[in-house]
Length: 274
Image (cartoon, rainbow, N blue to C red):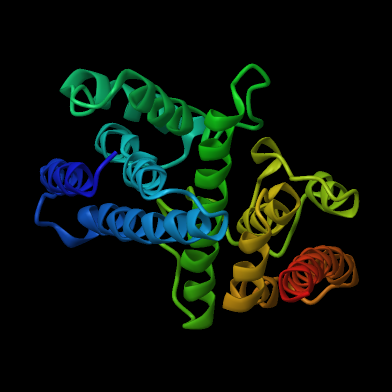
């Protein structure tokens, strides 16, 4: 892909998403948040792509995936007034339908279009497919990591500034002083928790923290540690021994990932310098 193609797609995205705006603040606010989220995910995926030395053409492809990964959220929200896939529809599938119906990607080579569609299809899936080539899996992994980095930021900013999270963003979960033991158990076993087990806002916070166990790239862990968003989310949880232990597992895992990355960097520098 070329930069001018990305510019054209960004212009199309802006026109498409603005068509959903009603002029009513309470209705438009969740969509504005998604537009901002998309811009930051594009930045994240390009940063991660540069960290693994993607070519300029590959970075353009990655940025396009970031641009369209949540495209289905706009139609989903218009139909159902929620971002909860379990209570409405799979937003990734809706986004793919929109891309196919509008033919906005049809000027791209078939292999690039297929890579974009596949990355969108699996960006929110419980696991990645086993029957895709390494090149396709690379972009699937990049968008999943880039997406997590900004989701953490969105929620962390709410708790940093003592704001109430947008109800649609937190899937209208109740803010109760409870948590599901299945989610805590997953964390203790260093597994990503399941959306199916969420019952409260605390569950959502814990589930997001558990995403550290599914990161693919070392730079993602470095950025997660540097930005402090996970720590902000953790501080917003009730002060309870069970949750303190869970947070300790998450923090320890993140520290190990960052330490491993620093070790690899030092070794590479020594080899190059020697």
